[in-house]
Image 1 (cartoon, rainbow, N blue to C red):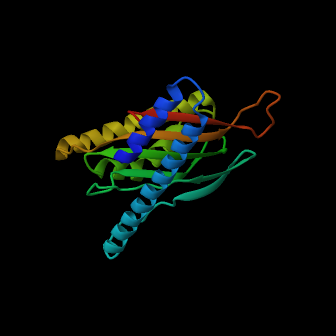
Image 2 (image 1 turned 90 degrees about the vertical axis):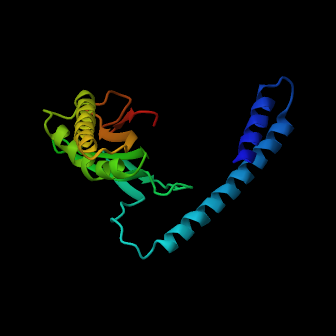
Amino acid sequence: LGGVAGLRQQLGEVVAAEGDNGGRRAALEGQLRQLLGEYAMAQEMIEYSRGVREGGAASAPKRPSSHEVRVGQLVLDLGATCWQGGKEVQEDRFFVDLTLKAPGGQSVAGFCVFDGHSGSRCVEELMDRFPGQLQACLSAKPALTEEHLGQAVVEACALADREFLARARQSELMDGSTMILGVLFPERSPRPPRQPGSCKLLIANIGDS
């Protein structure tokens, strides 16, 4: 990682410098891509070895790492991956298969990353409960609009926060999580030149995600 940081610093200096540094910049970018590729391969080997060692241990069913979904006229291929790195447990979680039903019956799709810290108990609870909390909050709205969807997301986040904080206080847990959430929904009465069946993407985040 020190080599990656050093190359990035050199690249930044070349970009900031005056004059024609195109050749030097291209060389540094090539070295950086190669080094990042080697690091990725090494990390994949670490993750594979960890999986082999822990293969016999019981674990909760994993959500899919890829998913194809249609919303309106848009077909979306979603995918994600994560590395545990040097931590004792994987503190991060994601899902790419969030499927919600709007009050009018429209399909709403989403994806989310939970960036856990100080343990995995918070992210495990969020993976288990947050999709249902978001569905309940959305179902309580009179119609699917950008405003109502935003309200449902805020309400679901507040509900998830209250529920986990109550458990954390009772059990003296230090776990927590940030979040980034994307929700794709059909646009209501799109104006030209946008076609019927067009979609919008709502992005929400908590913390530094």
